Length: 503
Figure 1 (tube, one colour):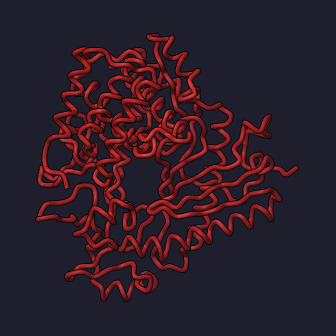
Figure 2 (tube, helix red, strand yellow):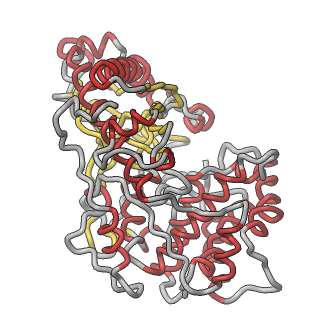
Figure 3 (tube, helix red, strand yellow):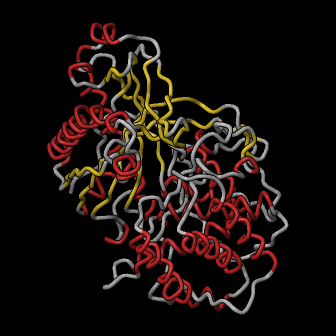
C-alpha cells in the first residue's frame, strides 16, 4: 500500500485553521449585535475553505424533523472527516498545479502566476450534501504593465459589472518590443489608438495550454512516484476550466495527512475544481462594512464566451469583455454573517433551498425552478435578505431558520413574479446601507438584471414551480396575510426591482 509523499515543498498560498475552532468562534456570539470580529481574518484576508455552520434554532422543531425526513431535503450537512479529506486533497492538487503553472509560463516572458484564491460555496461556508465541488481563481499579472478599467457604454451610459482592460503605460509598438511572446498570442488588441487586454486570446491561447500541460505533468509525477490510481480530466466552460480529480482508495490515502480512510464514505471518488484566471484590478480600501474596512481585492475575469457577454453585449467587442468580479464583497458578507445568530438562520435557510435544488433537479422530471435558476441567484437573494433585515430594518425578528425561510422565499417570489433580479453588487440602489463608501458610478450606469437572458416563458414556469413545488415541498404554506415584518421585506424588494432602467 502506498504511503503519502509530498512531491513539492510547502507553498504559502493560504493556511487552514481548525474547522471546529473556527465554528466555535462564530457560534460564540449569543445574540445578534454582539459580533466580535476583531483580530479575525474575514473577506479577502481569509483564503481558506470554510466548513458550514447549520443552525435551525429551537422554533418549529417538527418542521426541522420533517425536512430531515423529506426526500426533497434530508440531511444538508456532511461528515467532518469527509470534508477534511476533500479539502486537503483539493489543496494538495492546487499546490501542485500552482507549481506546474509557474514552471510552464517561464517561456512566456513577463507573465507571472501569483497565487490561487479560494472562492465559491466551499469558501463561503455554504456547501451542502457533499464536499465534492470547489472553486478557485488563479491570480496572474504581466510584469511592467499597468492597467485601468474602461467602461462598456450603451448610449453613453456604462454597463455595470463589465469592462475592457486598457494598458496604461505602453504603446502597441513598445508592447511588441518588450512582450513578443504575448503579442504573438494576440493577447493585446489595439483599438482607436489604445491597447487593451484580450480576454478571449489570453484564455484560449495561453491558459488552456498551461492548464493542460500542468495537469499532464502532475498525473505523470504522482503515478511514477506514488503508484496510485490518479487522474485529472479537464473540460472548459468559459470563464471556468473544470478539473476533475479521480481517486481510488489508495489515491485518497495518498493525499490525506490524517491517515488512512476508515470507510469509503470518508473519501470522494471524484472531486471537481472550477479554475478561472483572474487579473487583479484594484484593492478597495475605501469601503467599510460594519465599521471595518473591507480591503476587497477586485479582479477581472475573462467573460468573452460566457452567455452574458455573447448575448447581452451586442455593442461590445466580445474579445475584450472582462467581468469585474464582486465575490470579494460577497465573501465579506457571509464571513460576518457566520458571527451573527440571526444571520446564521438566514444562511441555514439558503442552504436548505440549495439542498432542495441539488436533490430534486436529479428527479425525472425535475421541478422547472431547479433547472432554470442557479446557486448564484439564491446567494443574491440571501444577500438582499441580510441587507433588509439586519441593516435597513434591524428590528425585524428572525430567531430560527423556520422564521427566515418565508422571508427568503418571498423575496424570490417577487423576483420571479416581476421576472427581474437586480444584481446585488452592480445594481442594488440601497447597497450603501451595508457598505459605506461603496464605489458606484453615481447613478449613470444602466441596471444589471440577472434574469436578463432568461426566456420570459421559462421564468413563468419557474414561478409556477415555485408555487407548486418549492414552497409545499419545503413545508411552507401561505395563509390569508403576512405579518408586518414580512410585508416590509416584500415591499422593499418590489421597489428595488421596479427602479431605474435595465439594459
